[in-house]
Amino acid sequence: MAIALVKVINDISSIKLTRPVATIGIFDGVHRAHRAVIDRLKVIANDIAGESVIVTLWPHPRIVLYSGEEQVKLLNTLDEKIVLLEDLEVDNLIILPFNKTFASTGFEDFIKNILVDQLGIEHLVVGYNHQLGKDREGNFSKLKLLAEQYKFGLTGLDPYLFNNERVSSSRIRKYILEGNIVEAGDNLGYPFFLSGKVIGGNKKGRDIGFPTANISISDVHKIIPCNGVYAVFVTIEDKNFHGMMNIGCRPTVDKECV
Image (cartoon, rainbow, N blue to C red):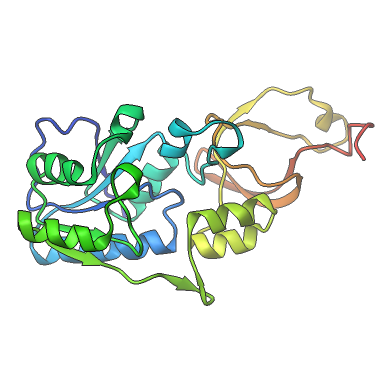
């Protein structure tokens, strides 16, 4: 069955949506907890014959507002996130450009000016402990007051637990940086993956009977597992292969490797 393409919207100035049911978030990883929010979003949209809408920010706020080690490493690039949302058959993905000026937007201004006045939302779905606006001032209690004021529905979800632990993007990043890819995939709900272009190397692998492909990752903020050797599945032009991936030092060809 063909995948329904999500409509990617970068300009909301003249947008026309049918009874939009929206959620807001970064959705880095599009993991199990995110999918619980999206599932509820789609059910409500279907019940009222409306459209499902994900509102996200790009770049990630921690990339814009912080530097050095305080910057976040991403579970997904923007292109990867779009593909994952297409798999989930979301109707619309609105990408709001995030910068330091946007970061100063107050919680109530964001709700009224963007969600109510421009999108005309009929219902808002938020995950556990969701906070919006400048300094994350917009908690669920304040959202309830604005929902009553502007007359849109509001649904808040309970924490999503997997193996008795709350699923979060930060926890998954920790697993990946530790090289615990199986645990990361279990929390994501799909195998963690890297995507990039094959680039030329020194072709030493051919000399020892194991041709290799060097992968260039386009987004410098994409998270990379810790150094090591990993068993992988590889997809190249819709063809699937088993493979082995090395990250970091190459003990077979680099004599200085320890």
